[in-house]
Image 1 (spheres, rainbow, N blue to C red):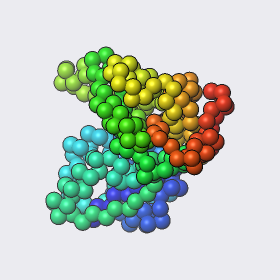
Image 2: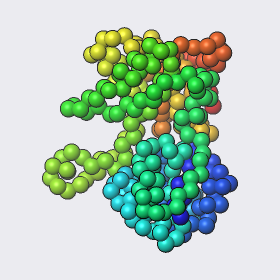
Image 3: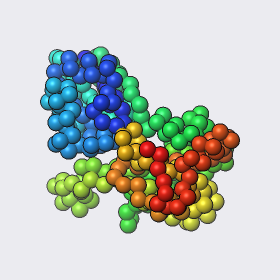
Image 4: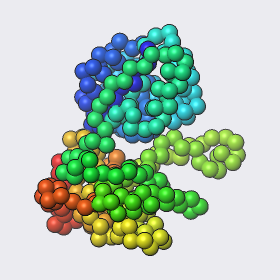
Length: 281
């Protein structure tokens, strides 16, 4: 049996009772380590905290392992119960859907234990979840690669009056281009996009496109460490949010569409008076 278990957003205590029971009966436990991270990150201390709670050794599963060597996990699940732990909800990333498909194609039983994810926790800011359009991802720009396919999606959402959740890039154990050219993988240091960087890139694309999908005066909501004890949620214009230090990762951003009066009231509690006067904690 392969168990795919959501861990929630905060710390080790956010796993559900059903998820904890499943982990405790599994012989092998993996934790996915590249689409998100818990509030304590994936440091040795953080992992030992999880291992102490579960009473199990945990194996880090990076992107390379999950996408290229998933057969190892599936093969083990033929012989004994295996847990694959995912921060947030198991289906917050397409990679995990692919793992389920491959397991089922191999005749492996799969059981999923759900949990909170960024997709519903953003409701904290008061914007109604059914008033969101398509979610977009904002990748890190490089000197030679500045993708902007998210622009049309944001523009379409804004035309319809819908809010847009922007998921910000996470780069963990990514091989450098130079090392790939040499044929020997060397990995870049982990990078987590900040709200400030995301807004800088969004405004760069708007300036290049010039279709007025949004601008520095567009109302947004910035989230940092959503679900943790020290989470920060701030509403303001792009220009205002760009000046705020939201602290450690993970960050995400919502571009606000047309609002209902109740949504306006909630945003009012989160709106910056000064860039230093912020936070819903």
